[in-house]
Amino acid sequence: MDLSASGERQISWAARSMPVLTAIGERFALERPLDGLKIAACLHVTAETAVLMGALKAGGAQIALAASNPLSTQDDVAEALRSYGIAVHARAGVDRAAYYRHIHQALDLAPDLVLDDGCDLVNILHTERTDLLEGVSGGCEETTTGIIRLRQMAAEDALRFPVVAVNDTRTKRMFDNRYGTGQSTLDGIMRATNTMLAGRTVVVAGFGFCGRGVAERAKGFGARVIVTEIDAVKALDATLQGYEVRPMAQAALIGDLFVTVTGNRDVIRAEHLAAMKDGAILANAGHFDVEIDVRALDELASEVHRGVRPNTDEYVMPDGRRLLLLAEGRLVNLTAAEGHPAAVMDMSFSAQALAVAWLAGERAGLAPGVYDVPEEIDHEVARLKLAAAGIGIDVLNPEQEDYLHSWRVGS
Image (cartoon, rainbow, N blue to C red; front, side):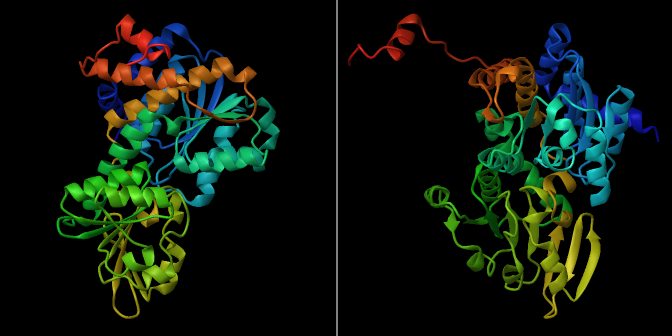
């Protein structure tokens, strides 16, 4: 099988559903905003990411790409990217040691800019590859988990260069976190288990933008949805939207399907696993393989049956209960399904591409820290997406503009 040809077909298919990023790539090819810059990226190696890499390369960048999750890597896409002249250090299913070795190989490029998904690459730069820090003048981070880590680094004066929080744009949170995660998470769960959600009790841990999307989609399938939270405001929001809110210790007793969407570790722990009913399904849609305590699950089980279905492992407890872990506790939407649809990543990666171009121009004047994406970029992405869909909106007339910008006009 010709992996490169297969990858090219996948990339071409994705690009057809990514008109905004394609248009930005065409603009970059003319304007060359990244000429002479070296970019090291740690992202999911998928067809959608390949379209982003193509746009950045068209803008003049030299790129080295490592995988942010070994189970989501599409080997044929990686091979196609190599044929395009992009250095890809990734292979599906590698172990933890190879995962980190690939990140180091991407950093061997001695980058000017970095793109990260979860802050692992930035973390390695600040702990193991400090020799490269002086040459790095900026970066972008596209996940909630990564931004949490970066803000903590900034608070401790440990962050050595400016990073743009791509995840925190309104378009990214809307399209990617809420609608993308909501749909693709349930897609992965249903592919892995062939379970019916109607009438089942689904426990969603975390009611941020991603958790809200999962809860909405599960409710739409007819599930009874229970939300667990640590944030009182988010818990109140979930309650007012009609969801049942309970602590995990209570939800563990009654849930049929558990989905963690928090970005934190040990959300489902040994005491929760010990209380779950026979046949309970465990899935993670947050980040990394730490939200479900897989080590505790291993220690509690008397038997483990790997691969009872694709991406499904059965853990048999000493009392005979069976718990089903999906995707080894990694991101179920990327491991058991195909991640977000390309139309979703069109929005996220368009914001990413424009943020990289902005950062390339502004980095010299930015102090180390975490920066929001300029609002005009968010509006441009939304405008381009509406235009691609043939959707028009109203425009303020001069009198309306004056009214909104004046305090002298009364009622």
